[in-house]
Amino acid sequence: MFKLQKGYNEYVTKTFRLPKEFVEQLEALAFENNLSLNQLVMQCLKYAIDNMEEDK
Image (tube, rainbow, N blue to C red; front, side, top):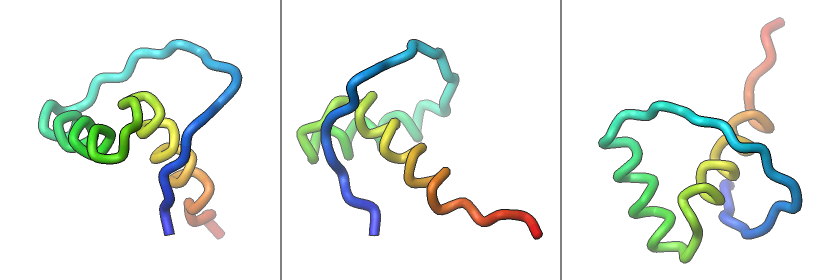
């Protein structure tokens, strides 16, 4: 199960374009969990990468 957590030590700045509706959902989820939008997006991406199916 995906669990939200806080904290990373090193950062790199990147820019991504996302649909407005998607960002609004992310912002609401971040607010509800007392996280920054950045922290939430990092955790979502990490979860997706860690749980990605490999092509065989």
